[in-house]
Length: 311
Image 1 (cartoon, one colour):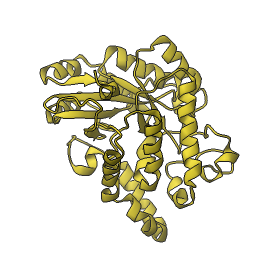
Image 2 (spheres, helix red, strand yellow):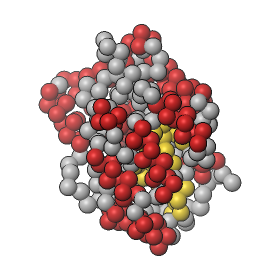
Image 3 (cartoon, helix red, strand yellow):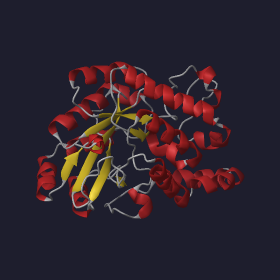
Image 4 (tube, helix red, strand yellow):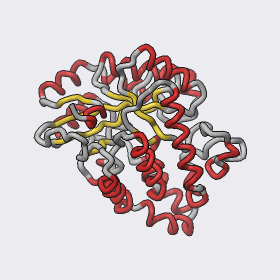
């Protein structure tokens, strides 16, 4: 852990972060509910989606004490910058390439355009009056293609904020969840490799587990704080039993749990994402009284990324 004023390693500290604030009215309302009535301690804002700045500004105005981070996004919606300023990031219609389309584009994306768009997203969130608490990553794209991660580190240093640990717990086997689903990211990578073997071979050295682990080393070398553990396995596996099991496995230090609570609405359905009804399931789990009791029983401390700012 690289906190500015490091929390004791003997303590078990958990940040429960809700991604995608601003995605729709329902998702935004669900996140606020999970924070007010459940165990969510932090959120991160998706600023580039249509209507998101207004939703984010309203939440910040009504709940200024809600810790809010920046959710960097380069594969959903439109860029904050005019598309002609970031042509390698967008399709002819000005939309970002989707999660399925972007692998083909990775070698063509200019890093100066990427850095400019990420900086514009940060500036937009700051312009809403939000002093954001941390930076994290939509669908982990800016981490999984590791050459992009230097732009994230530079942005974090510019704003003086911590970031999400880039190395997922699933990658290092640090946390086990009962699961009925296979890893969607792995399936996507396998399909891509089969369809585009030559390009996959070129990209492989930038997208191996070892390459991702090196991003954690780069963070430490740059002096950018991050949690010790990023727990990604609750995604698609949201049950009260899995949450309690996660608490029992939690190591000493600071961990972050990735969550996506939300109320399902037409805006969410129109977003085109595949994670729809699961958000309502997560909301129910995160506000279940059994989860709050288990946090107390396991002597786990809930916190936000503000813990890295010290006393």
